[in-house]
Structure formats: C-alpha cells, structure tokens
Image (tube, rainbow, N blue to C red; front, side, top):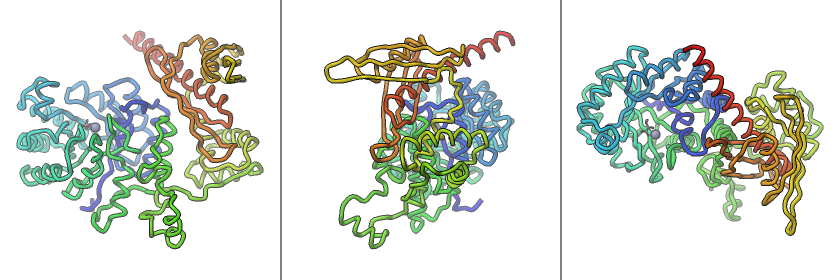
Length: 519
Ligand code: KIV
Ligand code: ZN
C-alpha cells in the first residue's frame, strides 16, 4: 500500500454503539454498515461478539453483507472470546480478529489483578490463537497512554513476534496530549525492533477534546490506521470524529500529505443516518456536519462569501455532501421522478420499496407543498424500519388547554389478532395522555426517559421528527417517527419503541426455546 495512505477504521457500530442512547438493533446496524461501506471506510468494527447474542448476530450479518471492507470483531484475550469472534466472522470476505488487553499498571492492579508478565503472556497467547484462525490480527494495548513505555515496547514486540499485523495504541481515557502521544509513537518506532512488520494504529477518546488532534499528530509520526466514529460518538465524551479527521487531512493536505479512501461527499449522509437511527442529534456547531457548519450569519461574512466563497469557507458544503439547494419534488411528481431522486441521493429501491416510499410520499405531499431531500430521507428512515409492527396506529386524538386536563383517545390495530382496540386516558399533557392510552391497550408499562422533537424542514408545514427513549422492564428502547402532526408523530414514535420491545421479547423467547430444544 502507498506509504502515505491512512486506513480508516470505523468503530461506530462497536465503541460508538456502546455509548448511552446510541444502541442500535440488527437492522439499524446493517443499514449503517452499508452506508459505511459506501463512505469508503477500510475497516468496519461491527461488534464485540462475546458481549451478547445481538452483538454476535450483528457482526455475522455485517460480515455477510459488506464484502469490500475488512470486518473486525473485538474480543478479550480468552480462548472463548476469540473463538466466538471468529465464529461471527466466519462468512466475512476480509475478516479481522481484534484482541485487546489493558497494559497500564492502574488497570493491571485494580481491574485485572495480574502482573506485567502475566498480561504479556495473555497478549502473546491471544494473538497466537487468533493467528491460527486468520492472518489479519489486530492487537490493542488498552490504556496504552498511561502504560509504562518500556513495558509497552515489550508487549508490542511480543505480539508482533506472534504475528499481529496491526498494533493499536489507544488513548482509552482521553488523557494524552499531542506532544506526549508523539513521544509514545516515536519511541515505539525507535525501540521495538520488529515494528516495521505491523501497521501502527491509534484510537483516541475525547475526554479533553483532543481526540482528533491526537489522531492527526500520530499520523504525522507514522501511524497509518486511525480508529474513529461517525459524529464522534463513543464511550463517555466519545471517540475521534471520522469526518473531522478526514476533512482535516483533505483540507490541510499542504501540511499533512496523507490520503484516505473516504468518499467525502458521503460524510453528511452518514452523519444524518446515524443521528436518525439513534435519535442523538448532532450539535449545530459541530465541525463538518453540524447544521451551522456552512451557515454564514454575520452580514460581513455573507458579503464576503457572496463575492468569493474562499473568504470564509475553507471547504465547500458540496465536498462533504451538504446540498445548499435541496428543494426536490412537489405534489405532482410521479413515481419515476421519486425513484430518480432516490437514485441521485444514493439509494437503490426495490420495486416494493419504491411502492411503499411513493405511498408515503403522496401522503406527505398532500400535507405540504414542497418536499425536500430531508423529507425523503425521513420517509426512508420512518417507513423502512424492519421491526415487525405488532401494533399500528389507526387513530389518535388529543385535547389540552390551560385550564383542562389533557386527554387522549387512541385506536391501535393489533396485528397479532387482527383486531382494533380503543382507549382513552388523561395525563399531564397531550403526549403523556396518548402514551398512557397506548400503555392501556398494549398492557406494557413504559417509562419515558427522553423525548425530543425537531423540525426536519423549515416553514409552518415542516415535517417534525419525534425521538423517544422508553424503558420497558428495565431495558431502554428508542423510537422515532416523522410527521407533520406532532401528536401523531409522538404516538408513532412511542409505538415504534413498543414494537421494538415486543420484538426483543419475542426474540429472547425464541432463542431460549432453540437452546432448550438443542440441549
Ligand atoms: O478505548 C479503548 O481502549 C478501546 C479498545 C478496546 C480498543 O475501545
Ligand atoms: Zn475505545
């Protein structure tokens, strides 16, 4: 590979998914993985297979579907972990086992209760075992930046001797600063005799807001793989943001002459898709993909940009896939135009998918005059979730006012018995009343943890997206829906979470039954 090519290792589906509020179901992970493939990432870390049945299934499915990138599965150093990771990867076109163990004295003493020699043996043994399954083995020295540097050099040399092809030096707790990280990387390059037999990688957390700066410093020191996530999601303050690293390398090629395989025009779409799936919004002033990243408010700035964009713009919105003129279709647009627009946006719909999208489109076009790209995306996000819909909303009506108790009347279609049920309820507000009525019909008792509404497009007839986090029996589920009517959207977002909870319950029961009949 070209010496200046930096490999992009995306861990949105693993480290990112581990962060609060960012959990995704199987269908959502697969959808995101397809987009990551279109984005051009080199490696997709699809999960931690031993952690749960769901993680295992996600790695297996992503490995089956995404054939171009390398698919990585995370595991600790035990035989059971490694074998499970390999099992999940068995159908991958390009599998990678990613094994890790902590190497800092803090972790050795308080978490692992092991000596340095024991951990060194665990690391070497894990790579040896992983290597018996596949050639592509990555080793991560967790908490590397707080690890004694001589010891880190010994561990790295030992795992390369066992055949590790990628060595990751994570800043697990987001503690290091660029000058210190540079010293760690250059010391490894100078002191580890076999270092040239492996690719060096970094994985930075953002606790001090330095994840991107640290990653770029490491690249300048010779690291050729960066681990990062879309929108910078991840444990605590998150991981290094993929879009920021990639665009920094592209915009400042004069000082950082490195290439990635990223199709930068897919960055905005990837960011939007993730935020639509998880319900975790991108902060407006977020670099590269935030709503305001290309907005020029101050008159003097607007004046400059109108004369010549380079006065205040260091990259164009188009270069990251932000369309400045996104008006697309209207009420009279036909199925053909809709299909063509989706193709332009990068979506190939099957005939039944197009039929479904068109139905939703005509319904929406009846409610609002102009349909924007964002509306079309909302149609896809909302209408194509693959979770079986046990309950469907037939009708909802809510009343509220300053001096009256809010009440709601909800009718649901139960696809389980093909019947309809109606309930009324009262609540602190119209949405609470609607949710209470839904609970009475489904028999579930949801605890609403988070509720957000945002307008997807401007104007009084804008489509609003409603996101909810609801807890059922101690497990939290996300739900979302898009609608021009806030009460309707709120009801359908809640039902989306209800259907996910029922589906998860059903899957658990099926897995138990399968295990019982097998054993
Ligand atoms: O932050 C970290 O150290 C990790 C490793 C498992 C790579 O996520
Ligand atoms: Zn991490």
